[in-house]
Length: 519
Image (cartoon, rainbow, N blue to C red; front, side):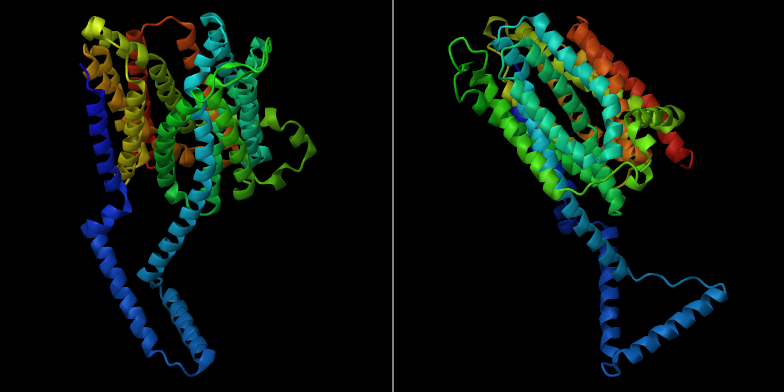
């Protein structure tokens, strides 16, 4: 019998350990020899600077100081004329510069997270209750499948060009548009009308495309504008860690909201319903309103290309189709961008299939082990364990990035993910299967900051959101295939493992081109 609470406790302790190791507190209390040498050098430089300040005469005002500067400049010019090396920048200046960059990054990250995590909260609140709500309305499994397929199809079709529009018109505007569209999708859930629910699914598909492309594009653009690209990996790692925490919190909030009031029509014979499974969607609606308002108030606008380059009326008229064509040709002509797109589709496709299949897989194994004693799975504990594993994965990414480049780390991530799926397929017990699933969730936690950092360096800024949405087209094909075919959990996991092997091989080639090839 699988002790899910024990596994959750062990995973939680492991997460605490790796999170502490990835934090600045670890470096403070357990500095490495390199950090110690740096601190010593800074202290010595600081002491020398203070001594020179004490020796500098206070009288003479600016005249004396200017003459010193002039003499230094003349000496510097003479050294360069003789072929000498330029003066080395003081360590204290570098330290001050690093300090200033860290402060700017912390401010930028706070602005990003408060908006992004509200958007993530709105999405997590809805996820577990979409199917349950359609079922409560009395729709058949086939009708529910049609609604789900429409949502993914909408994301695939509309997302292909809406990202280019965001690059052209402004990413902050489209993040506000995301909040509006997703809020409208939440409102449609109150109507027991298949056509209205279909409209809601179409709107939800567009919103999902924006959520998984424009937010990331804005973050990278903001880092580039602020000269903070070296901090990008940390930003993605922190966002992924926060996203996992939000997922756990959302589960608790959604559960309370769903049980707060009875699910019933607002009036006798009315098609407008309230209460029950609609509660999480109402909370999500509030989160989206706040998200849009904060994005409008806190975020600066950034573009895929300078607005000055888009003054031509002809360009403006064809911005959506033109941006899509440019993004497509850029993608297929650049092997690094194309590899990123295929790899991300393979991994995220396997992730979606995993989400669909882990419940029947664990249920079947538990029933075989327990027989009549089986009383159901503790879904809350299992989901929380998965999210804590994601948090641990994002912390492991931060630790690994101290010595590895994201291209190198990603090879390990995909290789371990392939191994995890092999364990799931070959395992005959619920316990070992669940442990393998947790290993895959750790890979998920490492994947998003790794791939986010790689795409930030590889994808051109002027077409970023458009290309990110192109990446989602094969992903949606994979998801639709898994929805429309009647694959067993075992066959589905074999498919996932195969996709991970292919992703590993493609990542090895990408790593070779970018690091081994001197790029």
